[in-house]
Image (cartoon, rainbow, N blue to C red; front, side, top):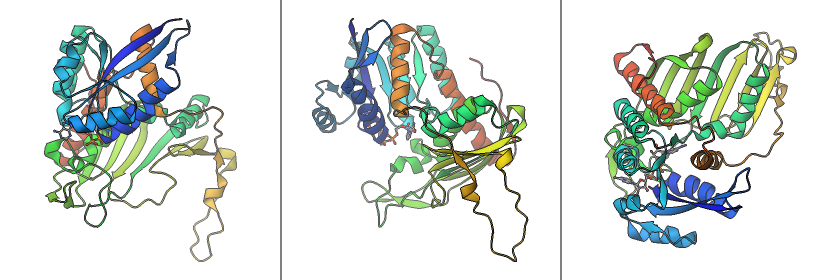
Length: 383
Ligand SMILES: NC(=O)c1ccc[n+]([C@@H]2O[C@H](COP(=O)([O-])OP(=O)(O)OC[C@H]3O[C@@H](n4cnc5c(N)ncnc54)[C@H](O)[C@@H]3O)[C@@H](O)[C@H]2O)c1
């Protein structure tokens, strides 16, 4: 029984996602559980080095988590053969240059989405990684949410019959920063800094739709900047140059219609920050982040339109909870474990840079659809 120490460069780890989801919930949690167990009894132990621009932040983060390795010098980290994986959770605009350096240094790549700012950059990363023969993966965390796992279970069981439509509602109110601080970084609202809800969320919607329902064939999208200015982390007012809401319709393989609203300017009156309703000939379901409710054809009520009397139906009570039937771990951690196994044992890991590029393709075509006020088909991606 051997312990395989795997050096991981974690760049952008002082950010929101880097610290919470990737360092604390994934890498530290894996270390605390004693590593990733392999079937031959060996154990993979991730050995992170925290990388960023500000020494004091890195030192404090390392101390908090009892880690000794941190650095402000990416090149030095890349030159150290102990570090076999490069992970990137920097802001999107910084990503492709750093990933290119890491590929050139022969590191395996694991990265947050979107992988790059443009489709051509995203495809260049695919090409470079292939040429260098390095393994690669992109965070697709939503696939590992309990609610979506339950939804996938229903799909795989044939519960829905023929799936007709999908309705996704995503969003919440992001404070403007004047009388309460905003709960997202200000760069999210500046196009020039890689912001915008279309760039951010279509990267997720692509793999959610492709993996659960069928590949996305075309898009019609209307973007809006509802809140024209906000206050940044330094208390300074700035113009919002990026979209903060997108109202999109996608056509999927099998003629499934998916309507997807994404907004940082909506107040939540639903069960969760993301809800996905699926209607099929045999049944329907509504999934949130953790729960999923279903209603079979035989349990479907027969409402009749009559506003002259009080509504006699308690619609929400007519659905059944899909049971857990398993333990659910953090989605980011599950994907990290699969990636680490992929590096050591060559086990399958389908969520690679090409899959990531498809997300950027959908964002780009969504933005084009908005700009040109028309439906746009999604061509198959080739490298
Ligand atoms: N998978 C998900 O659900 C999910 C959710 C939110 C964000 N993200 C992605 O994760 C990445 C990071 O997002 P975040 O919300 O953690 O952002 P953040 O602003 O909190 O963190 C960004 C990190 O990048 C670093 N950085 C490097 N150069 C920078 C520069 N010039 N300006 C600003 N920061 C710089 C920061 O120091 C920080 O460590 C983004 O690419 C975003 O799209 C993914």
